[in-house]
Length: 229
Image 1: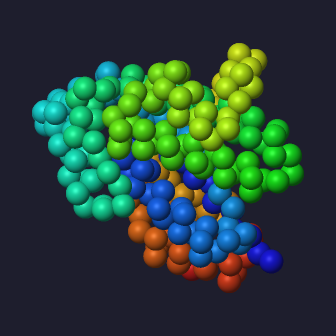
Image 2: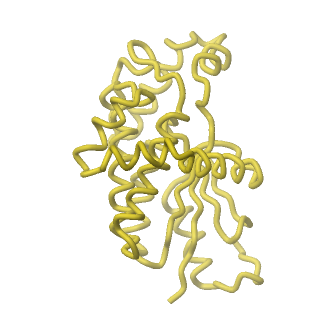
Image 3: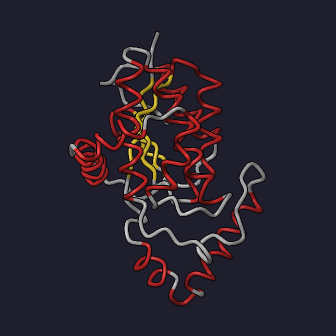
């Protein structure tokens, strides 16, 4: 059976990655084991205290960005955007939750062993609750204690996660993600990379477009053969 590998880059504080999660879930439901996601991080909100006032300087800064996010939320009924995001709660950096998730991935993979589905299930649940924790619940997910509070209900061993951070392993994994995002010329979050980098889907991409790319690759799986889509 052919398998399509998708390298998926996102920033946990990106609203479009929050929106896109339902499309990833639909890919899993539609294709099952025929598609495998490699979840990676790119840095879009690494320094929010500089980024938002600068990028949104002429559009109301935090208030303008908040208005934009609430408008996005109104267009997509499957998500909820808290009216207080970036007003009462302002995470300083997405790097912190990214680092936490790289440590969670290390712990989950070690715990699950060869059961990659089990490890991925835990990872997916925690990262979704981190995204929802900010956008839906207006929690500061850059805070270590908030991260731990979100992860514990999923059975995550916080002590093991902390060891992966203290050892430097989680830092190395995150650095590799950021370096690969640069090498692959990832423009932003979310980005789907298919066909060994030949196909890139970036931003608010609908499921049908993702599906068309996957079906074409399943139909023509040879790496040396160029896809028509």
